[in-house]
Image 1 (cartoon, one colour):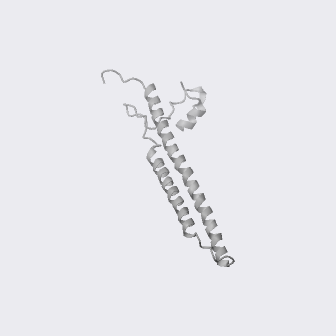
Image 2 (image 1 turned 90 degrees about the vertical axis):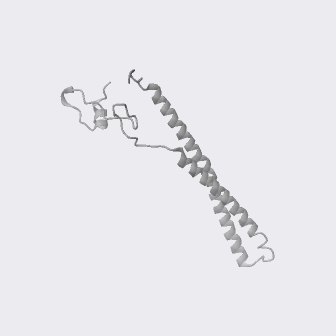
Image 3 (image 1 turned 45 degrees about the horizontal axis):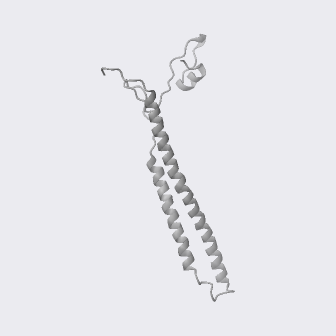
Length: 147
């Protein structure tokens, strides 16, 4: 089945031939679909689950560390305001502590979200990669006998 002239032009970079002649075969190929005859090309896109899983693990570790920092902030500031009511420094310290708690809480929550998302992306890509590979094997022509 031949591609239309417009598709041929897009994929092969060859302008359509005048007079209704059949355009040359399309220059389109699947990356890493190297045949025994050397056809096909090197993969342009390569996938590895590892970077996604590693990034998810780091995000999880950051979430845990940030949660610990929040607990440390609370325990370090415990009792600071006792006996210093009405001083300007006490109010300023409490304002600063509150903004840091908000920031650290936002970082903790975002790291927790990213932990799950990144690990899921790695898992999903890995499953799709395996499925596409199996689908390609299922439609590949059989090897001629005697080779």
